[in-house]
Image (tube, rainbow, N blue to C red; front, side, top):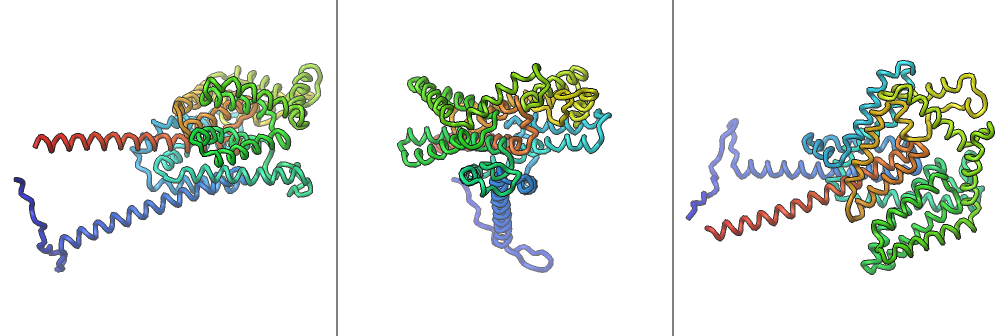
Length: 457
């Protein structure tokens, strides 16, 4: 039989005063409780900052920048370096950080570029530096659904205002904005609306399977409303490419084979109906074909023609410095140099080649492209398997990759932050669920070991 010691209630003398062990233990326990309470309050504050950040993303660049920085800073005091490094490894965010480091290093060999331009070239990559911090926070948060709901609610309000200003153009806030675009621009608005519409497909399907039809119908109506706004109010031409691809991936991954082909036929029918009834959809599609047909035939300056010209010049400049590129912030300099002595379309210059790969290639060569593709592919592998958060992370990356064929969307503000926040949130929740499952399994194993020990005794 084991001897169990009675609690030692003898007093301890310290500085002439008596303190019982019970008192000391109580104070220590109280200190631990206060510390845990402080950490909990800090975590709640971080969640509130995250909610404000994502809710402001469709509306304000300034508010998003401010509160995203505050969000990251609020997480830093709770970070344990060993755990952070583990998060970086498991979430595949090391290459996102690598892009920032490369942009910072690239300022050293951009010798023909003013320092102001070099620092402007670094600025779009700063958000990648905080991706591991955001993943670290989400991995330990119980309020990720609040953050998602905040973005959806914010986009829903924007959807309502877009529809209202499209119907009553006089209600548009400023003369610089066209009806249907209450804030920012049509590219950012289309990016946000398309993402909301397609991401909702997974919960709609799961709600139908669980026979929660009322909520499924509500979310389906909201998703259709986003798509109708894209079809009849305002549409970025890039959305004509990435929306069908996103829908196709959903059908491939989640629809039973018995309904897959029927869904394809239904989509083609709805797309055809939208084409026949929406002048916006027809005009945006026809403008692409018309502008591309003029490139090389006439010297007329068109949006599609300029994009092709920028791509041609970018490829030529990449061949000049294929390994390290021309350095951070060098795109404007490269285009200015190529436009010298030219007229018409060839004389156009810009600091953005409207292609993510070419933007990276011009500045950082093959090394930059390798990091970029490894980041995309590495994070895609994290989002394999069933579940809402794998679907969220996967479709955010797919939208970014496809839209980055025609824009530098990782470096643009709203699409870039959608990528950072969406991937960070999905990765953090996947790691959280994995850790919870591991703890349950470890707990069961420990219980088995205890029972085995008791039986042996």
